[in-house]
Length: 448
Image (cartoon, rainbow, N blue to C red; front, side, top):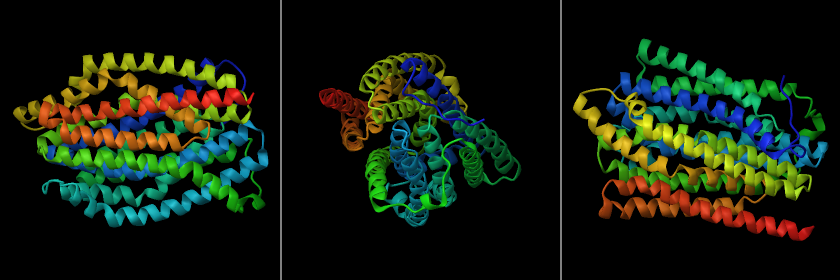
């Protein structure tokens, strides 16, 4: 049965870990079906199709990032109202979030479909992969409202301390996606369009699961009068959500500039870069899970004015995050090559070239993975405290460092410059976020 969780009482380590573990499993299943998409396309459609997926990645992530940032911002208000036991404010925050999400999802659908081709051409997408990229994006962008629905419902559940239902939703969606991938690509021969259709339908299933669970919770019990959002509440939600959406947009813009540099190295380099980026999700699974956990934990404890618990929770989360990152680093260095090989097909000489690019990129990212984990923990803690401006600024720093490194470093270190751009961007953002977290904690301590 779906339930809520109060994170203002109990041991921080147990609360954070028990909240994060279902999210890790859910993210693992989500990454599984993303990887299956790529494996099926790479193995059964070809290297050019794999490159088409890669060329569309950052533009697709731009739209998803806008959706995730907005809904994460909404969840801050919800978790704080829950921690303060303001039930009317909680219900009104939930209904206003749903209304805003629906309007934004409709606008994003139209805008993304219109802009997909001009943006891909602006990024110097190779002519032989452009049609496949467009086919994939047009189907994915047609499902924007579905993605928005899942994210807003899952964000509400997480804000209420429920991380189990998003896990169940992802498990079911993963199984649906894998089955439809095999049906659409292997049986119906729909190619890259089949992979995209399978993903959109699987996301629709996860959206419905979260909606059903939300309706079955003991709280919220929403009344008809609470569906009329007030102007101050709308401004508050947008003030929280817009900076996070802008933060993800800035990061995605930096990624698209890097993608244009990657495109200049040719189809085989794009394919290798894409293969590793599909494993990126596996690398980041636990980082985002600890992040969601800290956002909810911090938001609820801030609402309850328990500032010492925020400080102790951060220490616990940072230690667990770094330890997890080191384990994943070891696994990737040991088993990265066979994992990457699952995405490749074609002549052996072509596979060898693509694999060399992919494993080099994977090795560089893996060694510095602990920085990414700390970045997520500190960023999410600040968001839970209601600070969405510093995380937005950190996204701007990520963009500048990612673009600068990708554009200038290849002149000195070759292709490694593109790979180093990612970890340099993480480092710059993590330093700012950690420093500002402790500044904020100092100000909260001074209020007591």
